[in-house]
Length: 238
Image 1 (cartoon, helix red, strand yellow):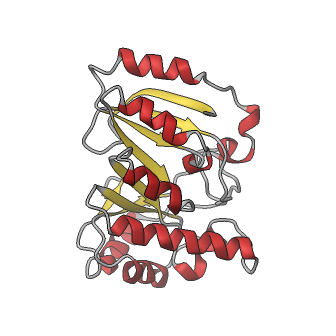
Image 2: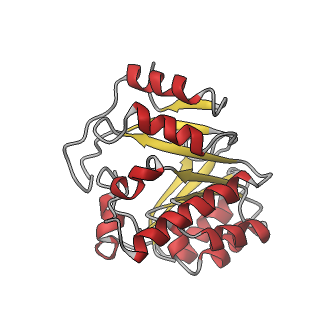
Image 3: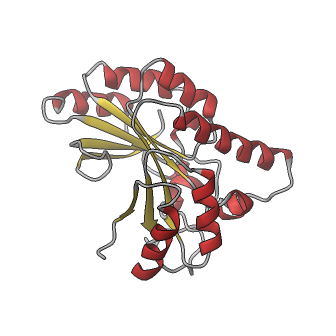
């Protein structure tokens, strides 16, 4: 596994559970507002943490921790992921996967083999603006395949009986009320949807974006409620 970050304790990354967070490198999107650009653009330049060391630490803390959040980058790009998760599950820990949804076959496999307990999938924008917001040039066979995969993953998650969430990082320059309404129509009836305000980490792929105002977020929530009753705003004091 290409592990480039390991947070031994978090109360934020796995809802309702004391967890550890593992950060994996590489991503097939280039979202310009990405807050962790080094994991996306230059993971090979980052220090790598030994997988055995991570598993040993999790084992030592398994009487304290309840779960592990695996995030990125995009974790599903790593072919060793199922075996790695299997070792985590053997410690009696729950596993939450953060994903951009571009590998529905692997997500389906992880569900089928009962290797994941919670999935958080990013929804970048409305379908019409999805590729642009993800930093992918539209019109190619690859871009069409990526968008199709995202849509398949949305359908897959909405058919599951295990907990999942969709979430969108709202960027003032990239999202409009029309986009939010379109997202609501797309995800209508889903279990849970979170609006997250963009924050400039100082490590973004393209600087210059700004956060939405609390009023913007509240107005977006009101637009979504008729489609998705369980809408929350995360990480902002309103």
